[in-house]
Image (cartoon, rainbow, N blue to C red; front, side):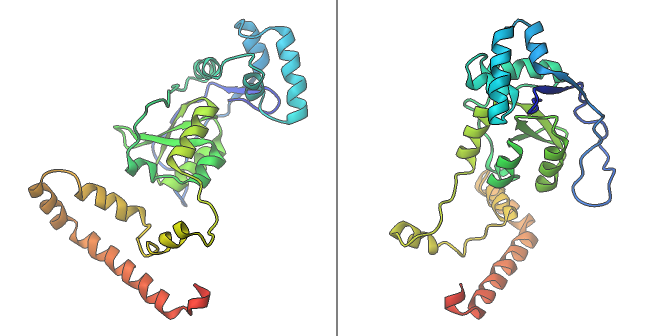
Length: 249
C-alpha cells in the first residue's frame, strides 16, 4: 500500500499456504518479500497526477508525516476511490465498495473497535473456504494481517478499500463507548451488566433465532451442551460479583 515516504508494496500473494507454519496463536500464512516502488512515479506514469502536484504533496507530507496517498487525497489531487482502484491493480488485491454493504453480526463480532482502528480494517464476510475477508486500507501490512488473524482466529483474505470508507464503517460497526458518568442513561445501562459478552453466546443466539419452530427446537437440542457451558459461565460470574464488596465493583 502507501508508506510515509510515498512508497508502495507490489506483487503480494494473497494466501501462499493454507497450512499454519507456527506453533502458537492463530497463524498468518507466509507472505513473500515485496517490492516497493515510488507511488508518486507510478501515479505520474499513469497520468493521475502531475509533477507540480507531486512536489506539493511531498512537501505537505514532510510536515504532517501522513501517508503519501492520504496526503494526495486530502489535497484533492486525486479521488480516494481512484487511488484505491489503482493500488488494487498494482498489488493484485480485490477492491471493495463499502457503501450499502450488509455485514452479518456474527462476522462483525470477529473483531472489535480497538483492533479495527489499529489495523484500519473491518471484517466483511466469511468466504467459501472459511477465510475471513477483511477490507483494509493497507492489505500488504503483514503485521496488521497477523494481528487480525490472531484476534479473529481465522485466516484473513485481504481486500482494499478507501480509508474514509473503512473509518466510516468502523464507527458504524463499533461505536465509540463514552466514559461512564452519573447520567440516567448510564445508570440504566448498569442494569444490563450481567448480560454475557461472550461472542460464542451471541453466535449461538443468532443460530437459534433462525429457521422455523421445529428447526429452532432441533437446534436447541443440538446445542444443549453449549448452552449449559454458557450458563455455568454466567453463574460463576454472578458468584464472583457477590464476593466483591459493593465499593470495589
